[in-house]
Image (cartoon, rainbow, N blue to C red; front, side):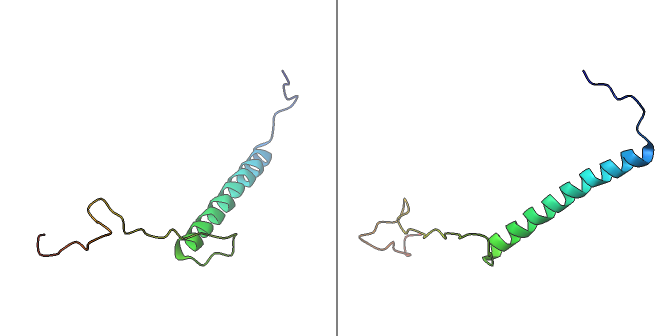
Length: 71
């Protein structure tokens, strides 16, 4: 197994750690931005399909309208 020959300095260690943290920060920021745009419908990323609501629920019969008087 490979073993480092010399000890890594604290400044170099901090620099590498900050680069790693910065990559995660930007990935999270992009993901949040995309989620917001998909939620509001203002996305330029690909195409989003909106599902059509069907009126065929369990209690709903297509042949006759449900009466509100029995509720």
